[in-house]
Image (cartoon, rainbow, N blue to C red; front, side, top):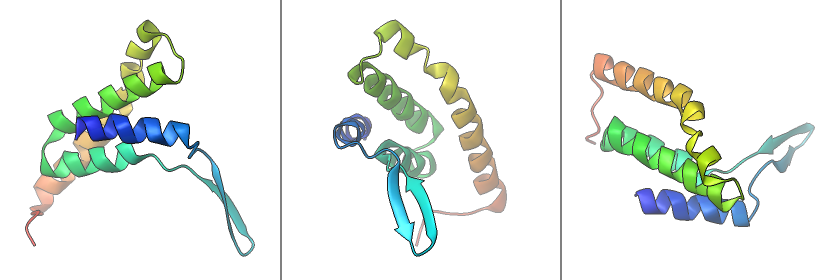
Length: 104
């Protein structure tokens, strides 16, 4: 799954899926498609926090390096992932306390 996060993230950068204009009648907004977010959120609930965090961090690191950022600066991306980690922890607590299960 981590390899899929990195590969789809690089694919997203190559195809420039950032700020795609969407027009629905009078409503106009920009939409960014970021596959690693979807994959890591899925991993959070089914595989656990550690796997999701590791994949999210590695995808961010390699996408930053691929986009031209120096590796030492890309390693600092961890600072931007701390809020993501806190949000994921909050979702895990909500899921645990509400006794939701992943079985159909």
